[in-house]
Length: 287
Ligand SMILES: Nc1ncnc2c1ncn2[C@@H]1O[C@H](COP(=O)(O)OP(=O)(O)OP(=O)(O)O)[C@@H](O)[C@H]1O
Ligand SMILES: [Mg+2]
Picture 1 (cartoon, rainbow, N blue to C red):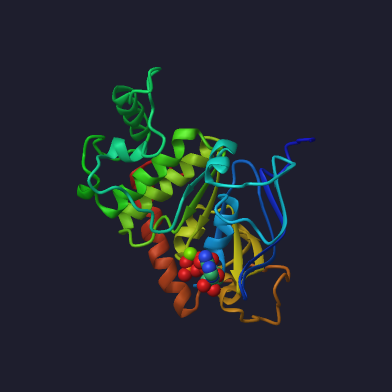
Picture 2 (tube, rainbow, N blue to C red):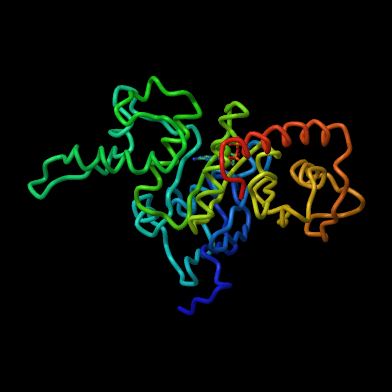
């Protein structure tokens, strides 16, 4: 395997995923480079979560190849993904409500001493260290039930970091969060990149996407309908590709042009975008 600076961290080629008669992914190519945040957008049922689950080892694709750091791989299950360095926060991830934060972080992968006895001390100090890297004020002994949605998302992201992953997969990390909580999570995503990790993030909220993503991949009805450098595209172009509308005679795959973000929906989005950006700069590091 030859690995250069331009070698993608992860490369999917011609991935098809069938569930009976439903083709959730149709010949999908997807690439993510080291230290890159890629947002995957698309309408409900477009195949976003399915794509993520293929990468996370939850689904075996019907067809296609996966390469990791330049070499072919099969990701047979979530544990295998985990040990390769792929950490995942699934959509609507659940916690054990009756356990505290530390216990939830280590659920299913408890640290033990030599005799096989749970090492609560080690888990607590490890939890403390990981949560300290987040600016939030979550106590490791706090019950999960007492946390806000934003704090739960923080714990879910913290949980993926236990294995020091190179790639973190996040399915709708900002769904149903307030503007401040969203800004906090987006700041964490930027920090993951600063730490040298890559992030694949599924997101419905375009302002959040434009605030953190280096590239944007549009899925529509199981197919890739566009791949853009964030700085070279616009809300209008992304919205049009999500909806499958051909704007300015430009079909999917056409060269993206930068357009002014001035239509009605664009103005609304920019409004939220500005608030999110302002909140990010208030919650800490910007880039
Ligand atoms: N385990 C499954 N069995 C059967 N069909 C499935 C399964 N998982 C997904 N599908 C189907 O595949 C298609 C894509 O689903 P997927 O969950 O990937 O969409 P999505 O883009 O994540 O949508 P959303 O934005 O609603 O989360 C849908 O038609 C869905 O019903
Ligand atoms: Mg989904």
